[in-house]
Image (cartoon, rainbow, N blue to C red; front, side):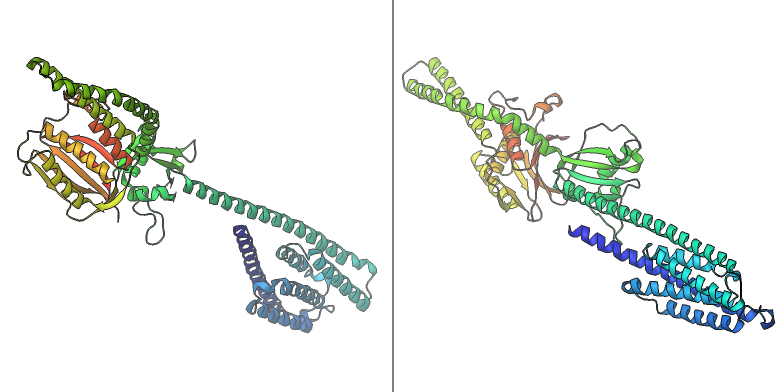
Length: 533
């Protein structure tokens, strides 16, 4: 509502400003016309004037008209006074033209045609409101002047035909001017209404794009960024230059700009474009503004692919998690009974062969119990208790505890901390479990020598933090890498295949990312975090 009122106020101000400029042009035309009259009276000698013409009166009126024109041009009224002063000026114009026409010999001089020009311009300036009024004043002036000529020179009544025709022309011109001005006003009102609708539509579109979960970037045909929402802000380096001009997409987001250029050149780049920016996997979708020609620009929709995958994974595993949790609880009761019975049997005096069988039963009971614990922990992965803490301090405590519990020499497990101090928001229990699983897995697959296991901290981008667990083992075969994070997949005879799967799920629950990378010598698991300030 306030925006519409403001737009109406601005349109009124613009109309008054345009009207003031038009009146100024008419004042200039009036001054030039009056100066022509003055020069004409000076140029024509006295003996060349006809008896019906008055040279001195013509010169006096022309001089007075020029003074009036000059005064109107210099002391032009402000926009707020146009409604009053403009009609007064037009009426004075009509009187001056009629008196000058009288001094030039009456209607036969042809100067009466200037009335038509005056009425037309006055009609357009006043939006046709006083057009017929000006024509009536001009008609009265013409008839009075002609009546004076008839009375003075004893002319026949038939000479009224010329002023009558001129008067009719004035009324016809006034009516045409009124109709034309009315149509212009209707067009201006329609254009103003369309402008308000377009502005309201732009505001609605901006609100919709701002509330969207996806990032939105609008690109014109010159590859400049025309619009974006807040979700796309972290992906853009700069939005405006120092002088306020739009920047090119390639300068603000290099990776997206490169793909967009290829898309504009009609290259086949696939429908699902997934790129990694600031440790985030993003899915891009390009939609042309003009379906027939993509060269007019496009809209880029950006989705956080990791969140999409996480949401799909959560939905898929939600029912499975509840089911497995119930099954785990049901299995635990008979498993406890079996474990208790096995312990009682181990206390009996059996042969070594039977004792070995009981040890196998105990080992498998322990393995099943560990699987149940992992399944229950996986079902509670969404219950994160994130807190802010220093990464370096946490890693030092983890390194000391891990080496002590797993009985690993400090020289065999080396750690390289961040040069600067960074804080993160994470569930400490989850981070401890993730690092413990990864480090234990790396140690078991390494050569278990000096520096066989390393924890390397590196910074990536503006706020990205990478924790790399590197081992000097043989690594994972290429055909098995796609199954690495699948549940119950393992290459160890004693493993249950849930360690890496649970680590990745806990990482996703804390808005981080866990990935595997094959190295020239060994392999690495990379946990990507985000620093907070």
